[in-house]
Amino acid sequence: MTAVRTVRGVLAATLLALVTACGVPGEDRPRTVTPPPGPFPYTATAMPTAAETGAVTEMLYFTREDRLVPVIRRIDEVPEADAQLRDLLAGPTPAERDDGLTSALPGALSNAVVELVEGQAAVTVAPAAAETGRIDELLAYGQIVCTLTARTDVTAVRFLRDGVPLSVPRADSSLSSEPLTAADYAALISPR
Image (tube, rainbow, N blue to C red):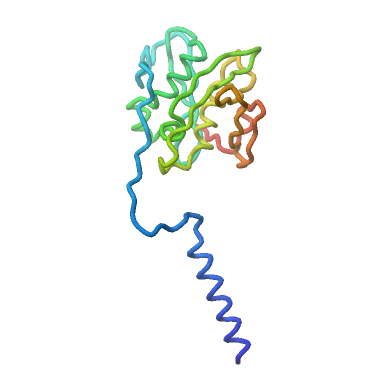
């Protein structure tokens, strides 16, 4: 009977430890959480430039329920990589938001610029403030990689901070400072 009580006690203690160890440290008193920064400091709007009648398509990746979702917009001309990144940073249009699409970029990154170098997109990022309360950084980097590698002139994307290669999360949660492709996020991509 004592052994059964001991086992029950150990099981109860283990269960209590698992329930209370959610990975978020406890705090002695409440604190204010700063909302994610936004909108991004760009002049682009979330509205497509030519509604749905443009001559070419622009592929952007937004999020829905922790998945990356490709969105095709019709525009007048093929955008430069920096213009396409600005369109991504501007977020979904009202119609796209009504369809349940969002973006992980606000709050994960405060700024991003792109430069094409020999077929690779070098994206210099500035992280958001440390206490934004956001945990979807993986989706944010996935949005950028999938959007830019959907272009015919981009084979891979690498991230930099202050000119130094930045390790970013891939779909399997591993970190990589190597050039990334949409294949690194394939497990997160959802059909429209």
